[in-house]
Length: 190
Image (cartoon, rainbow, N blue to C red; front, side):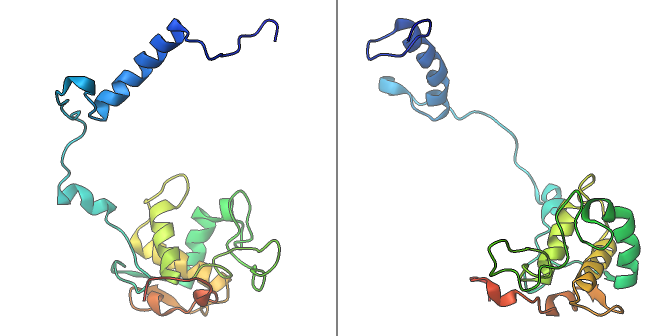
């Protein structure tokens, strides 16, 4: 090709020098000392993190409810919170807007274009709590209290016709919810 340079099998001294300059630090970080036989100390990055510093991040909730915090929230409280904190992204009734749809999709999982929502796809109600607590609202993750997360969870489950309008979610009631697609997954979890 005229006007452009193609790599060939011949050695290009500049290319070799550039590659060596790029790869030498990588081999040092990997502990490769080449043929010299000397060991290279590991880089001193970060520091040991104690239990106290890890506590705010240790928020895993399992399908059986292990890890759920104390507190609780009702569908009614969740409706108010949802309007204020969730509707701008997920739509007034979970129908979707800027962010994913949360409601509907029942019976579509076998179709070519399934509608995967909390009510049609998710296997455990505790997963909804865990996700909302970790990731929502989008502009301020982890800013909701446990009571607020329980309330929003109750409301989204209500919108999906999984719980009644007078439902209250807490560490006892939430793991007992039977999600419509609970058996749609293969899991190692009991």
